[in-house]
Image (cartoon, rainbow, N blue to C red):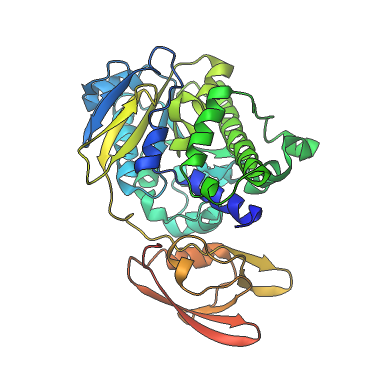
Length: 404
């Protein structure tokens, strides 16, 4: 596998870290983070919440009381886990019930999307208008149904939503060439990320090592792949922390941050960077899958302030397509940017360079419209693509089976 493909695969893994499985469990038992807790472990089970401070189960109401003391609340997620998003909503609902003065920060949007988020919070946009105006399937490319209950609750209760992220193009530039490759104007959007924190590097390496990448590449190529990933991960953490701090400075209210678990584990990511700049109290919650063949998982007590054990899902609620598409100047049709390496399209026969002529007889000229259409389909349903490949028309069925 070449370096470019490794980098793409790596970014997918980091974006959707699932805390389950043998190698992933090693990530849960690292001796890093809180000095008072990092050499201690606890056993967690499904459908229970555990306090890192005591190492024992805690009630939901007691957890909410603790969170009520914090200016920042970080809710880590596996992006394609509906049970985790249900838990996020439950926490947001409970915090709102005791204190209406709160807002929600979102990893999935760059700050350029703030105006659209404002319109959603003010109930100006319908769901379809929001998906179109926000370019949801361009910025995030996960089925909106994973998040819709959270968005509806914030809309119904006029809870402000804030974009925390930077444009992916800038993160890509940092990954490939480093922060110094940014222009002066671009550097205004992303503070220079700290790449020297030893424990954070240890965490990201452990996550990286739990993926297929290190087993397929060795030597300088592997080192280069990791360093690129680490620059990108650190840039993400840095910019989201900086934007969270700006919100806190501008508004005297609690900010609940929704971000991938890899950005908040061991309180070393967004949470650490924001705290170093503000010294404002924070609380972190992450969910850990309990594999079906096991009744419990042993984890480090420094993993997060609260850990919620959840039963492992057999499949995500909604399928991932796995097609990466691009536009070419002078051509209205979408083009397959690379051979699929994940999702339902992985083994369906798509090839780099395929021109999409139609999908179920419909023509799409942008990623977002096609994403909105494909989000209608569930597992094992079929979508028919008509492609132009090497000057030949190819009819290709895409059956939404899980990728192997």
